[in-house]
Image (cartoon, rainbow, N blue to C red; front, side, top):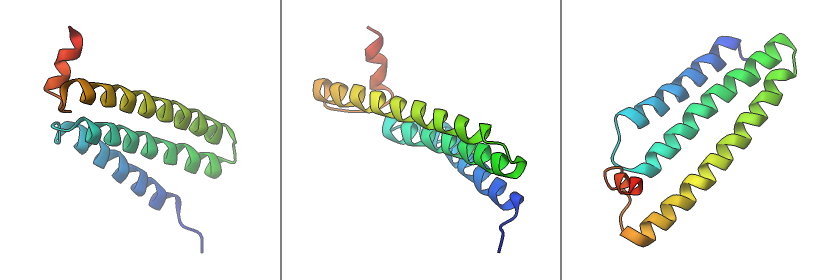
Length: 102
């Protein structure tokens, strides 16, 4: 049984919308914002892979691997900065991250 293209696109759009809601609605915790960014990138990657298979072209899958690599690096650096910030301040919230500008 082959799942149709539109089903994959609905799934990718739903992941993207959940990521957007996590960024714009829940702004209190920076960890949730980072996870929401990962959901956005996952939704985009699903689109790349689905259209790559649908169009029989490998370029979408290669670009998806590139996006996954950048997302992993972003997540690792972001979490490292948050761990250092938590050790110094004892709290992780978006309002307190304005202190990093000084």
